[in-house]
Image (cartoon, rainbow, N blue to C red; front, side, top):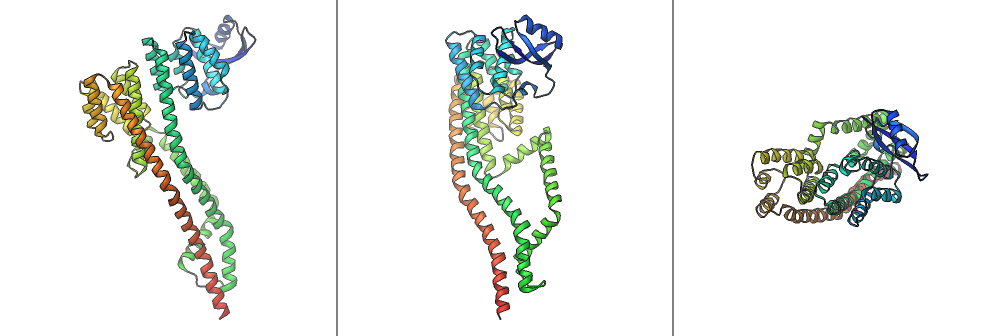
Length: 405
């Protein structure tokens, strides 16, 4: 069996597209015609990302939140699931997402569970989303689960937005500084060097920092192609390395050990773990399954490895709260609150409070970091400009004075 991407005209005369599972292309065409559709194109979806190859446009978290909330509302109102999906697909503006929802609707109409249909699109619906939907279908509480999911996606989107906002200013300043540096070294410094030669001759005595800048300028002018090539190779090699299992693990471990950055990443991971685990437990998912799914969602392989070790211990009969107390990156409060939740049978309620606390901590740290980064970047940029001005204006003034004497 394989997935086939199709475009067809349905009985209403509307052009639809999506995926259909069949043993061959001919079988896929036959199945489409049996459903009352007229196939326009049918091709096998071979590439890893083929399920999202229709529009090439990324599905935004905002679109996913709206879809989840509207689907929850319609299911609560008693609207049949296929009709919900068909209605929502008609309202979605993002072509990629529209194709995904149409494909899911086709699978649901063919008898597939909603969770299994969503699982075919991991770039849109992650493991947590799929597992919570599966738990909601099994327990007959899909509408409540979707409300939880919408809130969780909104929380994740809020944290991502804050982090991006905090990093936007330093990234822009750093980029402008690097471009300005290369522009000065390649264009301005050669002209300034000519001025030095004209004023003091080829052997004019210059301050050490001016000679260093001129040396850097000569190096960049001489080897600019090799510098760019080396930079591209370095970036490519780094990206390739961190996409390997061992490389990603070591990179995530390095991030956790970095000052300022490490604590923020740890707090974000703990907040995500607490809220996700709470949602899964509230949805009726078992502890071991919730640990496995949540581990993949924290966004850090080192912390994920800790959760795998905790899962093994819990499987052998150990207390989850006690095991969390023995981990390196989970603060004692998480283990203590988990123990309280185990004793009272309210793990989901207790962990929501933990998630709220750490999300507030992340907000406070990011806001404080943003207020510190701006003056630091201004000082660094000002220092660079000051050094450049001293390296240029000081020697020119001295050489001019020597000529005057």
